[in-house]
Amino acid sequence: MSESSKECAAIVLDCHDHGESDLIITFYCQGIGRMTGIAKGAKRSQKRFVNKLELFSTLSLRYTEAKKSNLVFIAEAELLESFLGLRQSMPLYRAATVLRELTLVATRDLEGDNGLFSLLLWALQSLETGRPAMTVLVLFQLKFFEQIGYRPNLFSCLRCDQPFGAARDYGFDGRAGSIVCSRCQGEQAAVLPLSRGTIKLLGSAQNQPLDRLHRLRLSRPGLHEALALMYHYGRHLLQREIYSLKSLGDTHWQA
Ligand SMILES: [Zn+2]
Image (cartoon, rainbow, N blue to C red; front, top):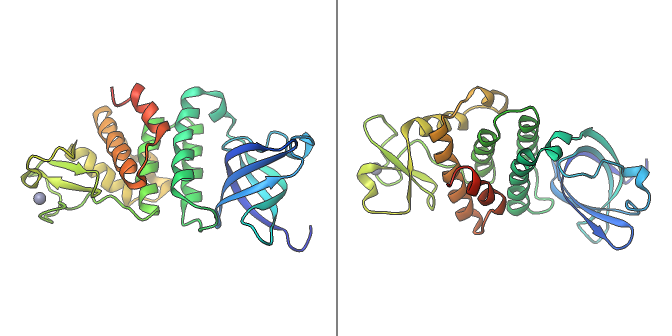
């Protein structure tokens, strides 16, 4: 191993051709965050990277940094988890694509990990092991928005500041990222319906570590409102369409 080479755990988020023989790959890396690298000759010499640079593969990566660029040189990759199941099932692939799109859109190269690597890995593993895909997507987004600095407020009304309680109905203001009680809602069309049961469950998920989230169960109507909430909130935060989520919604929860 050369002196300047480094190692990290990395998840493949994107891969495309570069010229005749190289590949450009975008990873999400433990401790580093998003990172883009070039695998020289990867298309010609299949041996070195065979079946490793596929979407969602989790690798132990060895790379060297370039002097004047953020682009790193990928020297070697060892497969840690292939997540083959996610590439063999269309519904799972589409769900995993939501994780990928959100991460690519909301992060920039080399700005640090901040827990997102563990969250991505948890979500990929949950999908691969057959946990209900839509529930995984709700919980992933809930944690994801918090980790990029926009934790949804599910504990008190945006306007009157009264703590969440059983005596009132609530909606969710996707622009402010907060619940609003029925007394404060007025005529505002921007507020999405959100049942008390769903608010309680999402609030509880915010306070649980990843390894305990599998205990939470969303009812079917709860799942639909939670997905709609995450979709509208994410679209507002990122100021763009989340295409993978929108296309899922067309068939699953918006209809
Ligand atoms: Zn209120």
